[in-house]
Amino acid sequence: MDLTDVAPARQRPVGLVELARIPLRRWRTVAGSAALVLLAVAGYLALIPATYTATTAVVVRAVVTDPFSVPSGGADRAVNMTAESGIAISNDVIDKVAAITGRNTEDVADALEVETPVGGQLMRFGYAGHSEGEAVDGANGAAQAYLDLRRGIYENQRAAVLKSYDDTIALVTTQRATTQKSLPTNESSTNPSPRTSALLDQLRALNDQLATLAEQRSKVASADLSPGAITSAARTPVPSSRDAAPLLLAAGLLGGLLLGGLVAFVRESMDRRVRTSGEAAAVVGAPLLGTVRRLRGGRPDDADLRYLALALGRWVDGPQRTPLVLLSASTNEGREQISVGLAAALAQNGHDVRLGVTPEMRDRIQALLLEAQRRNPAVEPVRPRPRPVATPAPAATPAATPAAPAAGRPASGGPEDTMVIPAVRKPRPFPTSDAKNGGVYRSTTTADKTEVIPVARPSGEGAATDGSELRIGTGSVRLVDLTAPVAEGLTVLDAPPALHDERGVRAAREGRAMLVAARDRTRTAQLGQLVERLRAVGAEPIGFVVTGEGRD
Picture 1: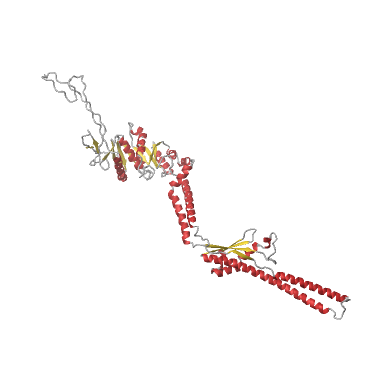
Picture 2: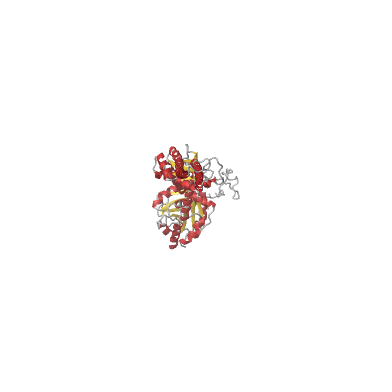
């Protein structure tokens, strides 16, 4: 088995529960992303100055000679709104707005915005300023500058047309005066000569032309040159970028959560850790011996440990007991807690367990054992008492008077008589404050006081590392060195992390290896590497235990 066998284990269907578990499991990533986005939004609101936007509406109208006439359909076609938009953002308008607001022309060009609805004759001048007054002055100044510029253009055009009419009228007037001078003064008007008739016809034509020119000039002079009017002038208060601060913060929080969830899913897809017992089984290639939950505070569940001890019954209760070696790929996987809990569970069942530990883990294991002893105090095992045998009275002794019957024995002392034995109270622990480590409690009757029975402490080869033995339940747990020689009885070895220390793998060659994998902590690559190392030295794992917050 190589690491490529891990891939099928990761290809499992992902349901809604798993989709919800991933962000919850990586809540630090989600919270960090949300905090960063909120910090960025708050920095934007605090450092970037507020922007105030004012809008002024202008109605654009065409130049008409008779403002009281009813416009025909499609009057908007008389105004080219594209050309009007170009005039509205021309340099002349920008220069006037810059003079009003006191800003440079580049900033004014960026702050000024002109909108022209399609099919209408309405223009909206929007100006973004650093204060309400600047925004209002900029929008109204831009609209008025456009109207003044457009009126000036129309007036220049009308002045040019009127000048053309005036020049033409002056020329025709000169021609008419010349024609009048050419008429004979002494010729009869009733019978004029052909030359006179021609001059009179020319004079009438010039008079008609002058009348027409005068009429057209009067129409041009009376034309309404107003390019439009301001229908909605900007005024305070005006909207600001700070008005949407709560909405921006809410959007930042939502965006941060979404970003954090996306980052969590990306990290989850790249993180190869044991999520279920099925993944661990695919990597180890051995059966699941148990799942040990963690209670609040990180302590393993005692019920799960007892079930684990039952699952190991064929190895710990057999005639040939070999050391049971608990291995994990790395630290922080709960291996030492499983080792102590398993030893305590076996001691509760009456086993005398030798728990092998490394010198650097002795203090940690000792503290865990003391905690396990507080939860499961020592009790004295029930031992059957021998049945008393009735002894017959000697036949040679004469009995002058009948002897008094002994306590619990009938008056007739024949061998067929039945002897009544008083009821014996079962032992029951009565722990007291003066009970010391390594003592058991025994009670005889309800009237007797609880006494502490000292326990003999073995010495010699395989003695405890600190010279003490802990009684748990009806059994005992004795700490020994990991490399101590194998002795009679049940031995559980808490091996150091196998990827960095080979002592556990060396011990597994002479015992039975059981792997410990932590849900959401153990990496599948490291677990597979540990299995490969065990099999390389000829140690086949008997199974594995999964620790974590819950079950599959």
